[in-house]
Image: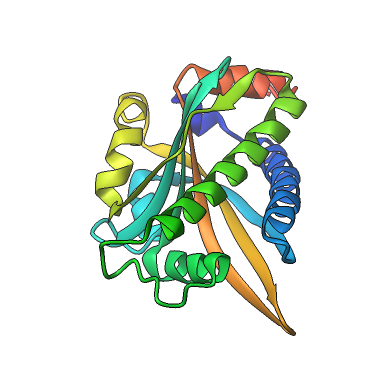
Length: 213
């Protein structure tokens, strides 16, 4: 049986708890950076097939904004934070105050791209920091790379190695809630956590929930 098929609900509960702690750290960092009230939460962590991954972001041909990071250290892997372009555009407009920014109409101003890249950097760094605190594993994110392209084109890179041993990945759903006057603006994105095949057992053993437990 593939290692991914041996993941049980209590394994995902642990990942969700880690995700919520990481989201809390990221919200604090973003609030300080922007001097605005930002809240974040992780409503769900799931194991999904590769086909479902692309469906979650609107289909394989849908254009998305994605921040990609390589996880380096004792449990290496890949991480994507992906947003539909309309949600990414709204988030960038809010972050920069530039209401003319639109990811549907390149070329894009560097400031907007840098802002989105920094959000991905903060999110991934906060999540991995919480993960390292829980597992005591040494893990660091690489410099983030931003891409705006078809979902399948972006994901193919991260799924290439994992596809040799299974057809599933872990998705950490993330909601970014921004307070605008009396209203709350919600941006929904997805973290796709793709540990290298050998990293799963390392991670769950470190969490105290062995993959066969």
